[in-house]
Length: 455
Ligand SMILES: Cc1cc2nc3c(=O)[nH]c(=O)nc-3n(C[C@H](O)[C@H](O)[C@H](O)COP(=O)(O)OP(=O)(O)OC[C@H]3O[C@@H](n4cnc5c(N)ncnc54)[C@H](O)[C@@H]3O)c2cc1C
Image 1 (tube, rainbow, N blue to C red):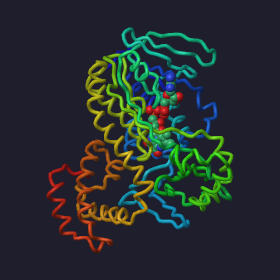
Image 2: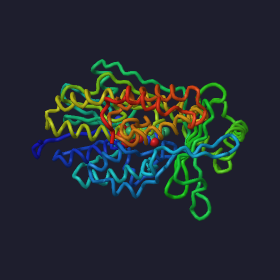
Image 3: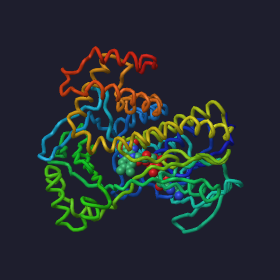
Image 4: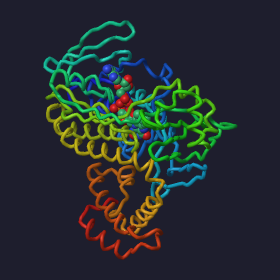
């Protein structure tokens, strides 16, 4: 365990950096966090960047390890399923889990980040705001910073570093420049735009509160997550090029016609559509593939800095929080032998980061397209029925990712076996009653019988 003088430096006080600061401070490290932005608790966060997020079991488990699940619960709104809006405004609720306890939660990004920063400082971490990391020398352990308030450049010699500076990580860029690491940033040809559905009269939610609303339209979709003040934050996911695409919505007439045609019921709830659409930035999404996450005992990338993913499984933050928990376990084993800590963390986490990156991409197709296919709903229902019949053996993949904490890579492997079973069982079935359950039992015993139980 660290001595009283063991220091560690984090870069970025976002979601992962603030939570990690708590883990490290509680272990007795002297933690300093350099954050490029002003203190968000005193400044309004600019709109347009995922104001609310889905928090699931993995994220909550990491928060619980720091005793934060209770304070965080006050910020949460449970979402029991996807509320699907078809072109005619008809609604269908597709539950996320088999039991009422299997829900995910909408949480405000700034609300959660504030709470984590408060807890990090209470645990003894120092957060220095307006300090942007510009470069890092991995040989000498020198960090180059810019004080954004004074526009003053300076350097500090302090290692090790953990980079929690997000998808565009400056530390990852320094690793590319200085260590020749070839990073692939796989940008999606689709972007996103955030919009506001204001609260209804009396601060009431104007749509079902406890659901993640989706308007799936094939190649694109609109979604909305509830906020505690009665509003929803809606996000349009759409191709950047082509028709329809962000490029074709440059004029208000085209925008209005697009929404009337595709999201008529939502349009009635978006009074500021035009102003927000042209004011808010169009966000980029992509997957970061970085072949190396650490530089000897000097630096480690964690969270989005190491493995940013597309947002369609609602797991980027959950995965980053789980990273904090796993890193803490590695420190528990190896103390401040950073080379061993970083190596073991990377070995353990890489297959899981790759698995959730793939599943997140697959989920985009599911959310915007597959949910419109009756076969998808039949397989969902069948999945829950098989889960009930074979507790802990057959667990739908979505549930393994969102409500369990087996490694993502194992969830993906088991999910592939289960999908093959579902495909076979529903090949000629249109209704649940037409599924041969004896055949299901045989297939499950054959293909999943030797897997550890998930209960
Ligand atoms: C549209 C959208 C929806 C999403 N929805 C979900 C969801 O529902 N559920 C979920 O789990 N995940 C979701 N995510 C993913 C989630 O936002 C990220 O995975 C999560 O924020 C990662 O946390 P992080 O701390 O690694 O990075 P960030 O939260 O990006 O934090 C990085 C921090 O580093 C700071 N920083 C950056 N550069 C520097 C620098 N040079 N010097 C100093 N500081 C720096 C930043 O200011 C920031 O404070 C979504 C993402 C998007 C884009």
